[in-house]
Image 1 (cartoon, rainbow, N blue to C red):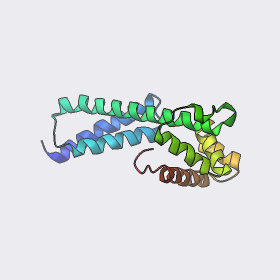
Image 2 (cartoon, one colour):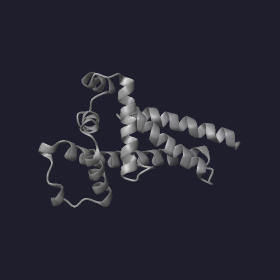
Image 3 (cartoon, rainbow, N blue to C red):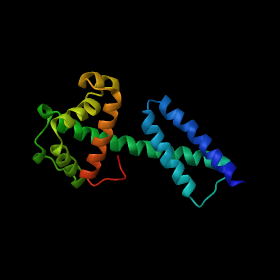
Image 4 (cartoon, one colour):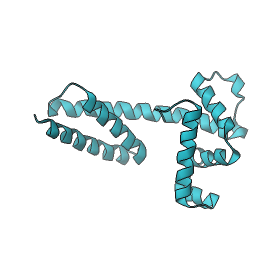
Length: 164
């Protein structure tokens, strides 16, 4: 089998799976991230599978990656909600937080009130970018840029350059 054709076959399968994830309720950005990660992993493998074995293998990889991503996102979401909604927050000293969770809490404490509000609107209140722009009375492009910079800052503060 020609390698170029193999890559096209993989790309087509992953596109199909991206659309499937979105149709099942996955956010487009998360679906694209999952597909991109799986595509890179498959291309880095030294094993070339025939098409009848490749499809089930890729489907399993995408399913596993999506579930892992979803669980990690839910976990961080719970921490953000617990921290960003002080009335509902239990004292963090009563809980056993992992070192990474402690890093996140410390990073959130370092943020300005405006940045905490931005996170609250996005991840707790689940506002769309347009709703956030309206609430903050700034353009949507400014909201996108602020969120991008804020996520980058949080990653630096918790020392995480590779995970979301």
